Amino acid sequence: MSSETKPSIGEMMAATVPMARTLNLEFTETSPERAVVRLPDQADYHNHVGGPHAGAMFTLAESASGAIVLAAFGDQLSRAVPLAVRAEIGYKKLAMGPVTATAELGRPAAEIVAQLDAGERPEFPVNVAITREDGAVTGEMTIVWTLRPNAPAA
Image 1 (spheres, one colour):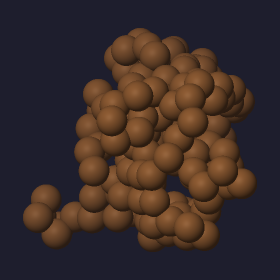
Image 2 (cartoon, helix red, strand yellow):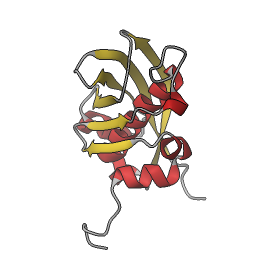
Image 3 (tube, helix red, strand yellow):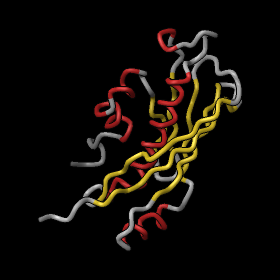
Image 4 (spheres, rainbow, N blue to C red):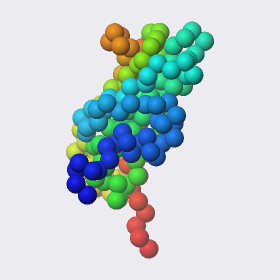
């Protein structure tokens, strides 16, 4: 399969993660260095003050973290499964209209792969900033991920 016909990480996530599809998340950039995902302004997902619901923003940020994990470690999927371990989110300012989540790895990917190579189960943070269209940071989230090594074949 050529790189032109290979689905993007955003397309794969929309196809395999029902919540990403449900919220109509837009994966605008996905690389091993950064993932950017946009939540359009949709009345069905508003809270009591007319902005995006906290649960929708949590899903947005977690989806951005998953996109960067797949971009950074997709070549490791034959030997390890990426799993979110825990997450913490802080809502900083009122979010109105569309919001965008930008995710970055909290540790170099090479360090994480080296731990996996050493037979360990690495844990690593992914830091996500949620912003309004005016650039104001409305939320910050840290998701700790792990690469769980696959069980050896019997």
